[in-house]
Structures are given as structure tokens and as C-alpha cells.
Image 1 (cartoon, rainbow, N blue to C red):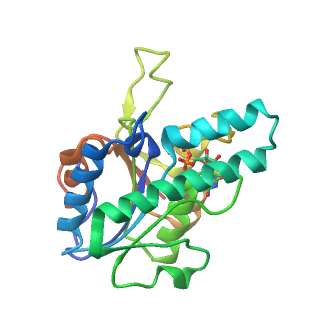
Image 2: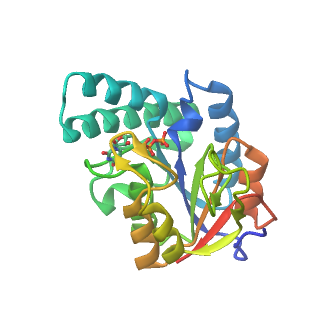
Length: 231
Ligand code: UTP
């Protein structure tokens, strides 16, 4: 599947799944490779990065569940985990990046790469990234996690599941509507993110970001493995 970009200078928002940054322990090898790619891309593109919470978020959310904490409290714990990870990624990027808590569009104004995490309870960082893509009038939203793309059936249960190379946001909405949307369990991509992509026609790719070359190919307009979602 060939990606989308024809213009040379574009605005790109990366939603980096916590599953890549903290699959179990912190994956400093992934962080280093990802930051090296961003270091190259920023010479040609304007970039913002939203980082997920990964295992760190899920540990806190699970522990709070044992104490009967509310959904809101568990989401708030997850949000803090995303910010720890975002701060770490910003630190790894060094002088080219600025870690921020983004609460309004003007927080995105910077000559540096803004790196952030979650905002408010009730969704995941995918929705935050989709909102930032709208604010920045981004040409591309890259949803990078440890999954290969969107499948027609759950691939973990169905060996005959087939990956969909290109799909509408409407079709994706139909798929995610059947998936859990609870603290720590926004599988695939969250519903609010897809609604935003659909409403504002945000070009989106969903791919495995653990394969850095695949990520580079998607952004550079070369064939890549993943799903293109057309708003
Ligand atoms: P993630 O964005 O990492 O959620 O935020 P996720 O998709 O479930 O996990 P990964 O990225 O695939 O590993 C972690 C948790 O923090 C809360 C949610 O509970 C979410 O599951 N969160 C995050 C919010 O409530 N609001 C936000 O804006 C972001």
C-alpha cells in the first residue's frame, strides 16, 4: 500500500502508542530509533508528537481498580503516565523538542517539536492526537502502535482475518464502536479519534511503529504495511 504525501513540506502529528515506548519496561532502543527518525523528518516537515501510557498506565489503572477507584480517577492516572512517557521522549529528542501540557491550540505554537500526552478523562491519546491534527491543519496523522493495521476481524482470535489496506473513517467507526472504550483499554484507536478524523477529514495511517523503516516509508510516500484511513 502506497502512502499519501506528494507535497514535500507537510505537517505531521504522530500518535505514538505507549505499547512502543513502555511495552513492559521502557524500550530505550525504540525511543532512540524513533527520535533519530524524527530528527531527520523535522528538517523537511512540521511535527507534533503525542505519547501514550503503555504498561505504565495499565499498571496504575489496574492497581486503582483494586481499590475500587472511579473511571475518572483511573483515566487521570493513565493521563499522568502518558505525560511521564512524553517527557521522556522529549528528553530523548533533546534541543529540537519541547514537552508541553497542551490545553489550547496556542500551546502548539513553537519552532520546536511539541511533545505531549493526554488531556481529559474519557478517551485515549489517539483522540488528543486527532484533535491536535485538526488544530495544526495537519496533512497526516500517523497512529503508530504495535499493531500492523486494521483487520476485518480480530486477528488474535481469527487466523483468517485480513488486513485492510485502505478504508473510510465511516467503516473504521463501525469497527471501533464494537471495541471496549474503558480506562486502559482503548484497543486499536479510540472512537473519539475516529469521529474527529471523519468530521475533519484528517488523512490518517495506522501502522506498526516498532518497524522504523515502515514508519519512514509511510511518511515519505513509499509503499508501507498498514492501513490508510480516508476521512
Ligand atoms: P493511552 O493513550 O496510552 O491509552 O492512555 P491506550 O490506547 O489504552 O494505551 P496504548 O497507548 O495502546 O498503550 C492511557 C490511558 O490514560 C487515560 C485512558 O484511561 C487511557 O487508557 N487517558 C489518556 C485519558 O483518560 N485521557 C487522555 O487524553 C489520555
